[in-house]
Length: 274
Image (cartoon, rainbow, N blue to C red; front, side, top):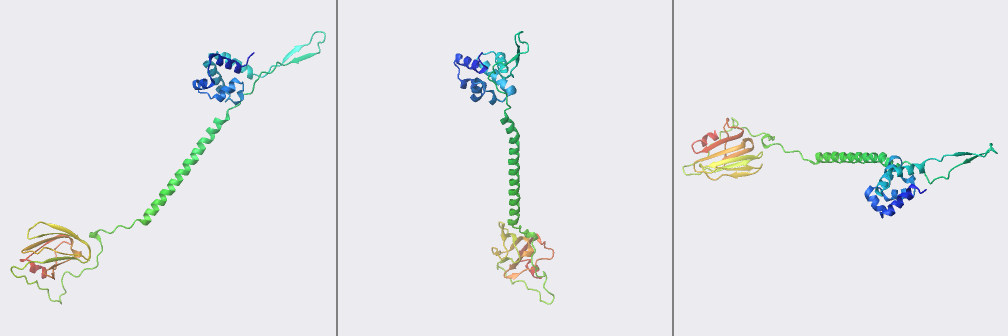
């Protein structure tokens, strides 16, 4: 009686189908198909997988699936011992006969997928853990390096500590300064010096167009000559010194220290030197 592998191979050859075509139709590797045809079931996954492979092969070559499974079980079944009694003339003699063993092999469990399922998640987990640890380490090092290298921001101009300024009013023992002698027709020459810090300025001369600038500490600016009036707006009067015709003025006591305004004209110039 032909074996399962011989029967399947015969059916395949009768239909003119190659093993690669059966592999493409059933999605079963040709290595397993060759093992089925040679009745070498030991390299198959075993259990339900082996039976599924046999059914798919049989269905492709138009062989009855149940017949193929029956042949498979018949080949892998253990041998049955048959006891044949001797003739009556010698009743004590018992002959034990064993049918010729069919080509069979015990199904083996396909261990490769089990090993992959066991080690795959472990390896992936280890790789992810190492990657996260390295990433955290790099981020911490960059943060520490950035904090060490980042310079401290300079204090705002309006809040910077400036050295103590001279008293706004001269000592009583000193004679009060005299206003510059401005004769009719003379121009008002205003000069602004940033002596102790930076300062923002905005000024208009004789009602003309306003101009603005920022004086850095140590810089000075000569405003355009005025015939009648100069309006000066400042950001921080503690950092500047204003001179009119080469004489320093004294800010009024009620003049704001920050974002203030003064008007210098021929009529009120004397009040800035009292």
